[in-house]
Structures are given as structure tokens and as C-alpha cells.
Length: 420
Image (cartoon, rainbow, N blue to C red; front, side, top):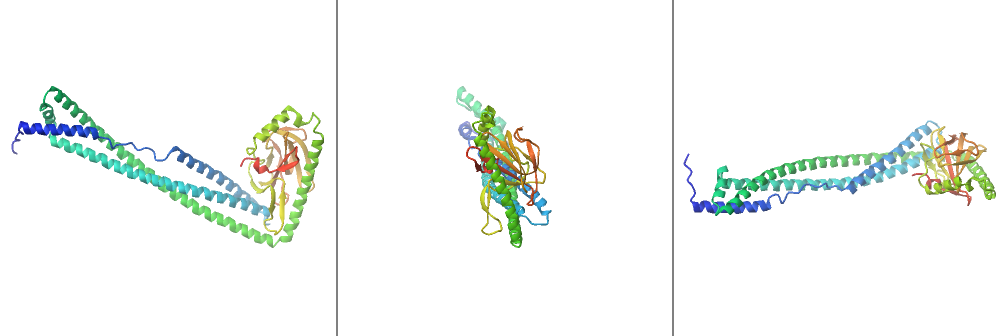
């Protein structure tokens, strides 16, 4: 191997000056392209996802309740309008679930696109960092070996320049190590982005699968409703007779409530009345303040009869008018007070079971279709305290709830008062 021929001092000085200049440029540029990857999904998007998942869980719980009721109603060989009403509610819930899943699919597609962009960015960043590091290595090769670093220092024109070059070389070495660390961090960030990307792809596949399954379930519910309507049409006279009995019970209940409220208004000047007491006034204010947040009268159930006038599911030209709501539930289920109040009346409706009315000061709540009651007139009840149990009057067990404005003697829609 030939002996190394030393470079003339003028040549070496030119080289070391060039190296020193290159070092300064490298230190100015080194690491400027490195940026730590920031999360691509902001907190707002994370919150939106959690909100959709919570909404979906709530809908699924309500669908499960309808399935349980459908199973119990189908144990009865006779098809009932309550089964149709439960199916209708279930179909409405499934449509809500489909809307939720479509929103989740759109969000998943957006997250996937952002993750793909993040992977591309991380890949480009890693490539740039590696290119910078390669330039550093090439610069080191230009100088030679470890001993040559001192030549850069010793060839300086004066002590000040030598000191500056020495500091420059030390900083350059630190930057090389830092660049290696940046490459490692960038590679790790890329791996994390790739993992997140795969997770988002799997989430999208899962949402698509749920969407297909829910579409099939909604179609099945719609077909079952059509089948029930066909069955009802073949039993039109039977249903008309049944409807007449229900209308008679509702009319009798309405008259009884109006009589009670009329008597209460006549006694309004009596200072011993519950509404006139400080407790009654406090409860009245709290009752109004809790509109839309009151608990359901049963722990599990499905809203199958809505307030107001609605067409009969199978009898053309027939309208059903309700002054309250019907909640399908299991036979013998406990019915509870939707708010604190005093039992003002316990009455019996011929062919319609027992009825309990609670006084909340400015309003009355009415609980009908009861087979048994566990309270007496004058009892003070707390929110959630039992008033009785549900009875089956031929259409499946249903809790009937009404809310009346005591001053105006007009019925209000309970669905607007109880929690959604």
C-alpha cells in the first residue's frame, strides 16, 4: 500500500477553509426540516366520535327493549296492534341507528384520509432526515479520519479562528448524534401512523358491516309490519270491537279526571289544599323546571301510543285520540311516580283497572292501567316511588301516563316531560 502523500499547506488550507465553511452551513440547516408529528385528530373530532358511539349504544339498548317485548307478545298466538306498535317504534329506532352509522362512516372515512396524509408526511420527513444525515457522513469523509479534524483546527489563521473551528467541530458532532436521534424518532412516528392507519381501516370495515346488517334488520321489521297489517285486515270487525272498548275506557278515564280537576278548582280557595302549601309551591316550581328530564314511570318499556290524534294502523278512516301516552312493558311491571307529589285520588275505571293521580301543585300526573296499587289518598310520594303494577287489558301490558295542567284542566304531552 502506497505511502500517503501530504497535501501542500496551501491546498490543505483551502480544503480546511472549505470544510469549515461547509460545517457552518450544515449547522444552520441541520434539523430544520424535522418537525414532531402532531396528532391529526383534534379533540373535537374525538369528542364527536365518542358522542356518536354513546348515541348508538343508547339506540341499541332501546332496540333490545323492543326485541324483548316482541318476544313476549309473540308468545300470544293472536296478533295484536301492540306488536305492530312495538315494531313501528323499533323501525324508527333502526332508522335512527342507520343515520348514526352513516355519520360514523363519514367520520371514519375522514379519519382514514387524515391518517393516510399523516403516513405520507411521516415518510417524507424520514426520507429528508436520512438525506441530511447522509450529507453529514459525506462531509466527514471529505475531511478524512479523526486526526484530520485537528488539521482543520491547526490550519486556522490565528487562535481565535482555531477556537471557533474547534467549537464548530464539537457542535457538528453533537448535531450528528442529534440527527440520528431525530431519524429514530421519525421512524417511530411513522410506525405509529401506520398502526393508526390500519386501525382506522379496520374501523371503517366494521362500520360498513354494521350498516349492512342494520339495513337488513330494518327491511325485516318493515316486512313484519306489512304482514301484521294484512292479518289485521282479515280481522277488521274484531279490531273495531276491540277499539270501541278501548275508546270507552279512555272516555271514562277522561271524564273521571275532569271531574276531579273541576272539584279541585272549586276548592282552590281552601288554604289547606296541597297546592297552596309552601311544600306544594316548591314542588310545582321544581316540576316545571324538570320538564324533559322526568323519569319514565316504568324501568323498561317502549312508547307505543303517542299523545294526540293518530290514524289506526289498519282500519281506514279511523282516528285514535289519546290524552296521554302508552308504554308497552312486561306484565306486572312496577309503575312509579315521575316526580314527588301527594296522592290526590285513587279510582277504579270499569273494565279499565285502577288509576292513581298525583298532585304536583301546578300539575297532575295520572297513572292508569293498574292491576294493583300500593298507595292511598293523602300519601306523600318521592320521585321513583311505586304507585302500583301494570295490568293487561287485552292488548298486552301497557302503562298509561297522563299529565294535566291543573289550572287550565288541559292534558299535556307526557313525551315532552319525560326524559328522551
